[in-house]
Image 1: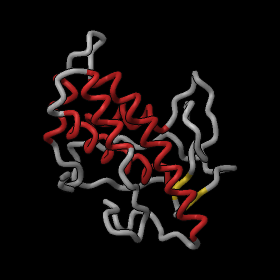
Image 2: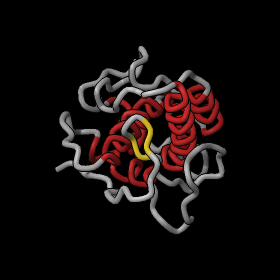
Image 3: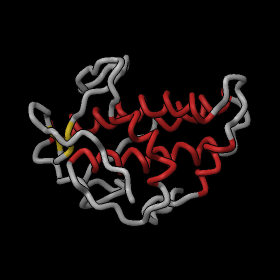
Image 4: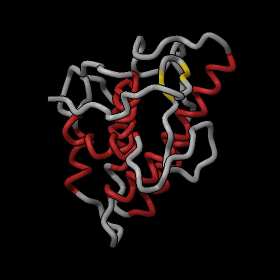
Length: 174
């Protein structure tokens, strides 16, 4: 059984491309609202559910937040693939920073991993808002992922990096 997001209540949540711009426990500047530090956010859910959800080839969407969970699960898979050859935390951090500097495609652009998952942007402003939100959520996910993919002494955690070999929803990560 797939783990779904607990963020089903959409009241007062701004949307871009059919994706809710959910609050984040983040210090990174961006369009996401700030969440309380003691509450679980979508990044916590994505990292917590990753090792279970990555085994599924189908994912039934029960709320718009599930779309973001799918995107983040795919992003974690990409990030782990980049970390696969990194033997220390310092090298892993450098690889994650380089991943964060890459262009982030939005729905309708080439390179977006799930065409049809999110609606196409209605305007250039909506596309930029969504791109900035994805950039912020990816950076936050990357930072938190490093803390689970590497142990306190800076060595890789094989129980996490082993999942780099998995394909999520049969999407091949290059």
